Amino acid sequence: MKKRRDFLAKHPVPVVSVSAAAVAAADLALKSLALGRFETVCNSGTALGWLPGGGWLLALGGVLSLWIAYSAIAAARAGRPTESLLWSLLLGGGAANLAERLSRGCVTDFLDFFGLWRFNPADAAITLAVAGLLALLWRKKRGGRRVRPVGD
Image (cartoon, rainbow, N blue to C red; front, top):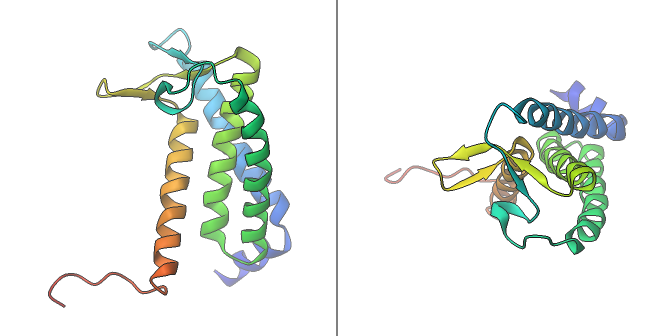
């Protein structure tokens, strides 16, 4: 594990870049396979179709992606692989959705969650990343202590 942390700390930009690019490439490949094979939705808004046609979100997304990339590289340099991976998932998912929004004007959603909403692999990566980062933050606020079962 120490060797991985040392490698990550010495080469943060390539590791973060490759991780984020892998997420984006997987998302875009799966979307291209879904087109014509599954029922898809062209989502011009944010998650769950909120704020349809929000072009101003592109500018905000560009600024946020720079901050996310910086956070991923900073976590890698500090030898925090889990945090770096989570930031990379967020960066890759956001980059994939941004690339599709720029090229098609919308994001292709094709994964149907029991008819409640539709999403795509990039959305799943973003959701996992945010949940993981919140869990890390919660754990850090608890002083790194693990939760004990009730009754112990």
